[in-house]
Image 1: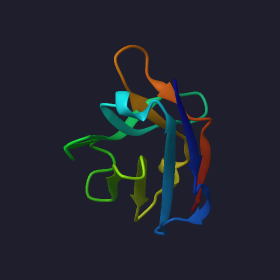
Image 2: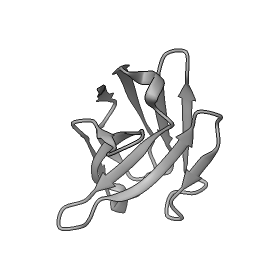
Image 3: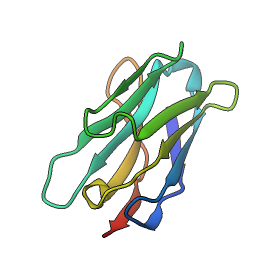
Image 4: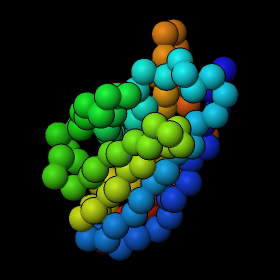
Length: 115
């Protein structure tokens, strides 16, 4: 079992920045990759960014150049630095841990970008 706890969401004006963090605990040795998804009202959950244990990253096209994912393996923590935020980035952001089997998910943190 893996437990994920997110922090760092909030309200920000367009053009601003936020930093999300996710701390993993439990069977963290089983984690192959960690990342972030988001879900806006009335839309499907979508990938934002992923990072593997060796540091390889993958970003959604809509956030490339604005968001940066990083990982502290020693602390089992992943961060998402979000810059140049846009109103369309408004969503609940979910941390995820990829293991053999179904992903683990955090409880979600709200990010709201006002225009």
